[in-house]
Amino acid sequence: MQRQMWLLAAACLLFQAVDRVATAFPDPELIGYWPLATDGQDHSGHGRHAVVKGAVQFNAIGPAGEKTSAITLDGASGFLEIPTAADWSLGTQDFSVSLWMRPDETAQGAGDLISQYDVRRQRGFLLGIKTQSVTTSVANAGHLQFGIDSGVASEWTDCGRPGDALLAFALTVHRGSLYAGTCEPGAAQSGRVYRYGGGQEWVDCGAPDKSNSVTSLAVHRGELYAGTGKYRVAGSALTESENTNLGGRIFRYAGDRQWIDCGALPNTEAIGGLVVFRGELYASSLYRPAGFYRYDGQTGWIDCGTPDGKRVVALGVYHGQLYATSYDGGRVYRYDGSTWTDCGLLGDNTQTYSFATYFGRWYVGTWPSGKVYRFEDVDRWTDVGRLGDELEVMGMLVHNGRLLAGTLPLAEVYAYDGEATWKKLMRLDHTPDVKYRRAWTMAEHDGRVYCSTLPSGRIYAFQAGHSIDHGHPLTPGWRHVAAVRAGNTLTMYVDGQVVSESAAADEKPLDLRVDTPLRIGFGANDYFHGSLSEVRLYGAALTSEHVRTLAQPR
Image (cartoon, rainbow, N blue to C red; front, side, top):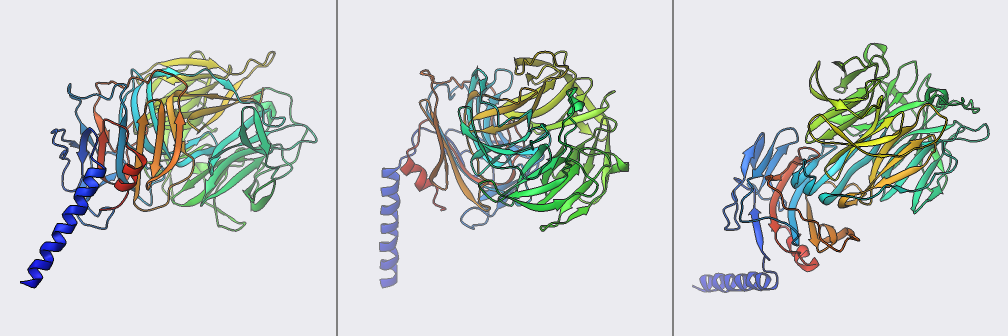
């Protein structure tokens, strides 16, 4: 009897505690609540049940270590879709998202967590984790991003010229800062790395070696790596560089202006691409002889071979495989960790230049057709249109739901409409009396996309809609993520702590009203690869205290 009385008293205390939490933190205007334990049912009482698409595994272990409390998505086809209904729409109102997520340990891109975005109207919202390889660099690596849009965009802003750059060959975000690797071709100059200081200020982080270029940048195991090279400036129809020092070496940043030599690729005068694949750092050669190597962690580079002796230059990872562009024949090659597969010739092109993942599909830029192609399967490519009258498609990335691409010979930037046409946004370089101008490479930082140019050497920034990002990879394991729109302010939380916040200058909130479905685990970037649990969508702005409560595993 005493044991029963004790259990009853304990139960009363528990219910009182739960009641106090519920009173202190009532769910404000809960639009939908999907625990994602054993099914996609909505537990908000509104009946907004999710339809399962592709490979979705229920009954996974959740954030509190409990069985049957999460779903696992394969990163290639699986997501959940909630049809749009006439009785709810985000519009201009405040809203919040709360969820638990754990990216797969092998996932490099991770993908979209939740989104509702209409690509034709460029309207809606997206929340996800992004890794983007742009031309020869890893521009963003595992960065959490939250954005809203209503078909609006800023002007392009001149962010200055790093040093005496002919161009910024490489752009990447490391520990919340934007870095640029330059080509500075004078006889007494060398390629350097700069950190963006805001406005038109670039802070000199030193020259890794004496060659004229820092051709690639990547973050590997929390450290910034740079590849160097003797860029043949005549390849851009300019006077050849007076600096004849060879590059072909990889360096690790040690802070201030210090760089640690991590070795050289054999017989290599310039590094082509850097990429992280299955936890290892890889590098390629820009010029002949072709070369592709894996870093041994000290100063050695292990020869991994090339496909039929062809150069593999720009490197990117898509759905668990490494892909490479080539300047030898306009083909794309795929690497599975041991062998190469020829994925086919893209039209009548002689070179392939860049990659981007958009709505889970793989896109490639080319020369000399100035077209972009979508990968369907080995030897199957779909032509998705030419960018104006341009000849070469260089840097491509997805910025707040929009696929952007830079070009040669006029250094223009275009946005893809989702079918087979491209809209010109801006010409960035107006240098007179030159044959080629390039919109070379891109990276996202602090809610904007940055694009480098040749031969002016200047970097420009652009913002679609309103977005924020967290320029640090997330700690592995289960993480609680929340995103809040309160008026014109966007805020992101990780494990109950604010990691990014920004207020838009516009007085009128963006209207997010769309007819497209709400998707969990998919969006304009890619399919999410990992586990999700306890997804909530609110029609109001959560307080920091409420977010901290939701961030406690239950």
